[in-house]
Image (cartoon, rainbow, N blue to C red; front, side, top):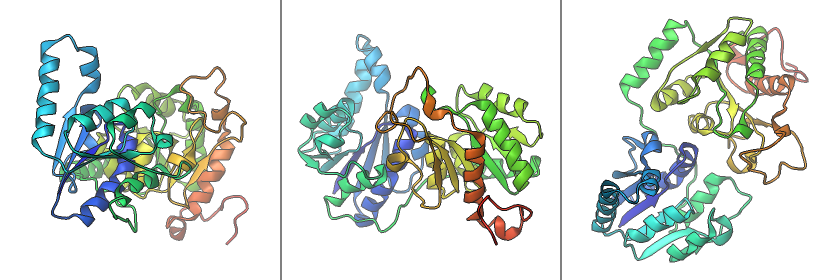
Length: 359
């Protein structure tokens, strides 16, 4: 069998698709599995052991340059390559018009996608030959697993195959040695949407409280264009326990695998941390953690109970009340989450347990 997976972006969405593809590979160990992904989001898939070939595209460039000869050459080249593979079955894990078009242009006779209520753009259904009914209330990972379940593929656990080079592992080892860190917290203030951002000053105050209560220092991570956010958190910290750290995507994976806790909003780094089984306290505003939050039942998603929150998903809002979450509320969640980790067995914060918890 020759399979094609279409999941173009974003990084978090790609991470949420990995368990379905890993389960497919386990069920069909000798089959070919290719993956079409946006070039800008492809790094997380590099050297992935479950995928035979990663086919990188740039649909944004295509849309902006439809009158340019080079763009059309790129499109024709991509389509020719897809058709030459003679795929038996194509999965559309995206549910958009652009992903549906790629699915159709693959030439595969069997094209699987979600039922109408699971599509992000309902018109993409016209590119599918089979639609799979999904549970809208289920986590996005379970939603993706429903597509491969149509072939009888069942996953008994979530696998996230992400390859990290020895060079990236060594880089993180050296950075932690430089900072003299063994146990630490990752703070990731970015979020893509303005409505997902928690105030930077509150991250700084939270980091100070974590150092005071739990003797854990914090490393602030950031993506492209977010350097100033990290610098402001470091500058606002009074304890001097906060440092910013520069990482690539794969280096962030290596860092997450070593962290005692991840704190941040609904964005790619949180989902990578979840895939690494890092303990998490997520700060959620307009998006629903039940759908795309951390999946470990021990992880905690902090949010406010507002009437406007359910199914909001707004990228712009005049008030952003949902992110007016107090530092104390997040601090309490940090204490409760850390209590479940081995750090407590090491007596790193034996002087004070989370409120409401006793020995």
